[in-house]
Image (cartoon, rainbow, N blue to C red; front, side):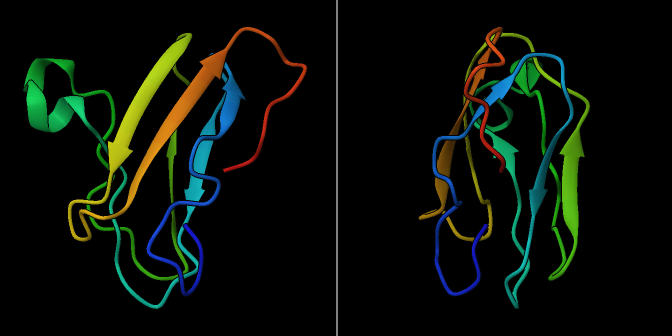
Length: 94
């Protein structure tokens, strides 16, 4: 999440599988990090932060290889996609 922007930054980060992933909230308002599976099919819900307070963060212990779309339940315009790969060559920070 980025201060002053209604988007996740970066919008499509790449991370290595099974390593911890953290989203920071530097904005002055609450946000969520909600896997699209939590809305489409509760059985495929992989992560849902609940409201992340300003200055706080949300973490997951790691995910298997794949692409995971997510959004903010409070601000539906905020959408992102997490790309999880086995290759440690180009991971980016969230």
